[in-house]
Image (cartoon, rainbow, N blue to C red; front, side, top):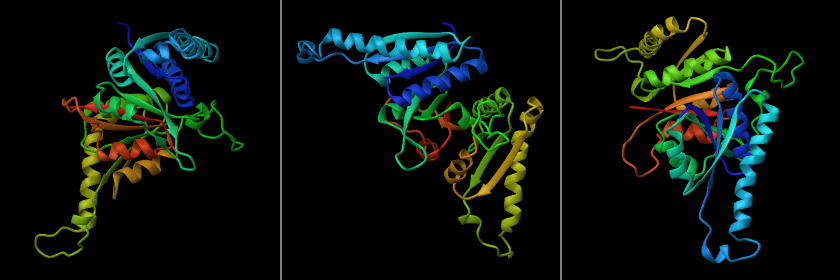
Length: 299
């Protein structure tokens, strides 16, 4: 099957924002968009009800992806958009659909009164099981949010992209390559954030067996530079800003997301089919980032 950007669509505002993001990404990648609408079986008592029966349910499930596709084609000319209706549980269907995709894009509700996402159980379960990158887009996300403001200080989708932010825990080539490619496509900078706990190194004693805090900080920065050196050579047109800092990785990434077009984090693949293990840092970033978040699975 041809590679696509696949979107989980349910008619909500957040899934609509995800579809819009997917169409913009599809243009950057020159790929088609596939809208997947999942239908749960209609319980027998509901199927017999004249206003809630199977025919009404079928009409609604066909209408949602059709109207969404028509809108995307109008707003994103040149992007190929297809729809697909599947029956089953959303988690199972979306994980299966992702196997034929370059990306799976899902929507998340914005937290009322707070920045960030509200990631539902389906979204978390899909992220935990998908082996292709999954992008979470919050309701209300606009194209202009991914770009710097114009000279008058107004939002604009015609200006340069904001930076891509990469959270680098244990360096993995799959995650790093994804982030560099996203920055290259957007012709923007890549901010690489690597954080480390301070408590074991808070001692400034210079006696035998101890290192200066400054020495350790420099060693961590040097290690990050060594990790990124071959990637700088492979992507000479991507400006790279290295940010090696003490403290909470989640906090630094959430702070950086405020000025980002996309945040990229990794998730270690676990073959256990049960549970929703996505890692503490990734979990925190998913819920509190103010920019779309791409979760990239790696071994």
